Image (cartoon, one colour):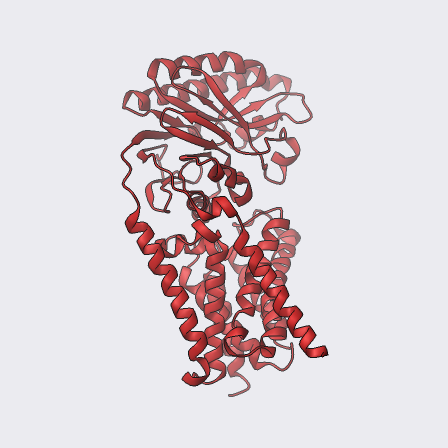
Length: 492
């Protein structure tokens, strides 16, 4: 039984890991999974437990991510292996370094390495911050407030540190005299984070200003399956051009009519999701005149997520968000800064180098599109500009609708701004600067084409918007320092 029991721990860790990943992760499972993996690794002689942990991570992530990761076959297997290898590294660091450190100091190795792996990965990976542990805790509002200072990495550190402290006790059969120092240190800091987060929420000012906003999204039955995608990528032959132009004209009418309806009901800001409005480039000026007239006559701001298509061009797609103010003036035309890999990356016109920041009657607004929000450093420009609103046309597929909306909510908390995220496939949301969801519409539900909300107009200064990923850099520096100290101590 003693020989089997350690493999029971890794089995439990695998199940918990599976439950902490995927399309709807269970937040508490992420706190528990590394506890069992760490304990298993520490029961093995030398590094022999790490291949088992790697296999367990391959199985759990491979089972959790179909549909979430938009590749299949060998590419999917390659992703799973690389992902699992990367997240085995913190266990390797813990196994090599922690035994050489005394008591409480030994518990810091795993969380420092976990933060380091996630931080470096988010800087080097084409998928940016996808897969960061902190996103799973988005609905824990007191804990979420630490993101206003440390980004997601403060949450990752606390989760990893918890696992290390529990294992320190487990290694010593939970003898209090062996674990009291680390336990009290962790309990004190964790309690401080939760108390400070609760106080931040309680002290949040009630906005004195608000604006009625609406999201008007795509009518799915207007085009045949795949037809709109072919238009966006310029895959239109000469015979199709005029019939498709007629369909696109009906689509344009649909958006303008529904925008007029929402403006007549009181909306002063209307958003269209990413790539929803389709227009051939030569027809763009005439369409803009219609949109400007509507905005002027209805006294509303209109942010149009649109695909402007130049047939015959090497890069036919311009994925952009165009803002028209209530006087009928185009004040911003923002091209997506981070196109998705695949068709959009190869067929789309390269985008802007930073979010567009514009002044409106209801405050300063920052405009970005979908995948842009997965790059904290990019969106931090909005925080440094003290934007009141993040206006985000976006689109998802069903398996990622929850986690991707959580990722956008983090950007709002990090930068102290209210986020309005408009989708036609996904969750349209309004989230305040503290991560509280004020409105949500699931556009995968039948008939859910519009979201309406009164959006508070208030921003708040954050540590993150000023110092960025300083916490993550300090974690890396701490890991390097500890590793260096261990090497010097061993050779002296």
